[in-house]
Image (cartoon, rainbow, N blue to C red; front, side, top):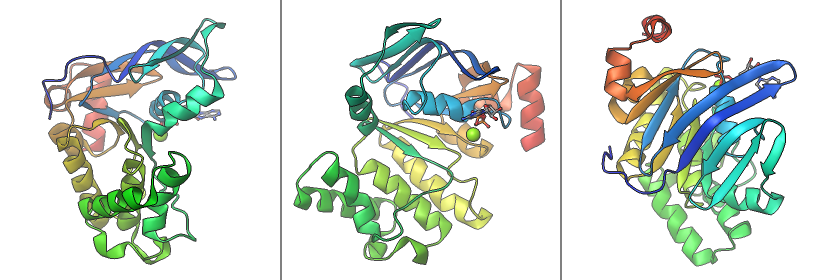
Length: 259
Ligand code: ADP
Ligand code: MG
């Protein structure tokens, strides 16, 4: 854990709102994530956690408020009046700096594990092949799958595939990693290895936003935990405090139910 984070926040949300038709899914999110911080988002299904991550990664445009991601780019709209909108090119560039890992790992089935890792750095970043290969092999080592470099995704367990997906995201050398319930689709006995990889990553100082129902992970690894409910952050604070001594009745109720 990195309590010493200083400087420009990685992510800053101020009054972020998002609706789908008449359904307001984010009702004014205020949140700051410092460089090197691990923030876990918890909360009931449908509370807007995934939508928030998708906004951070510019997979969704926000309707109101302001959202800063990284230290250079500012993208926001306010109350329907566009103050500044990212160009497609800026969005692409910023996405290369943000790694995202989903519940379903979506590896390229026709490529080896190694090629899955190398694809984007070669094609998008245009880094030299030798360098990318070296980095990919190091990352596979880091996630405990060095011996699977030449295997195809279908021959791996779900947990192994998810570790490959994490390594693939890291191969782009992102400054921020977003995880959306990365262990929810896994058999229980495979969850631990994936969480271990994420814990190690946190210890390297990576800035991470993790949506998870793994309360133990949130308590042990996160610096802070934010509890989402009904499109709002109901409670946010140091992980141990929010998990072991929640203040808001909704947080208490939720934690009692998931334990
Ligand atoms: P969570 O990740 O906390 O479960 P989501 O952000 O996925 O919540 O969803 C919040 C709400 O927004 C839900 O009611 C969901 O049905 C709705 N929603 C999410 N994505 C879309 C979409 N693309 N179109 C319409 N409604 C959506
Ligand atoms: Mg979700």
